[in-house]
Length: 62
Image 1 (cartoon, rainbow, N blue to C red):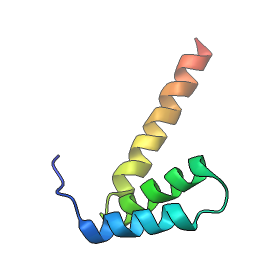
Image 2 (image 1 turned 120 degrees about the vertical axis):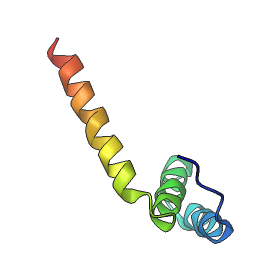
Image 3 (image 1 turned 135 degrees about the vertical axis):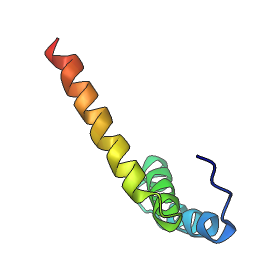
Image 4 (image 1 turned 90 degrees about the vertical axis):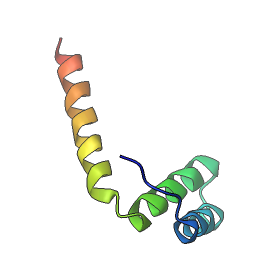
């Protein structure tokens, strides 16, 4: 899937980064989360997160 860059979503992500008061890692997390939400990709992100967690659990059981 190809998604073009949405400058308003990118700007919102940059704002989220700078507004984060908990350090650089949390700022990056806030920026990425904001961008994903603004681009309407949250359902894909949630699906990928669940699949990664299931894979990690399956790997840990071995």
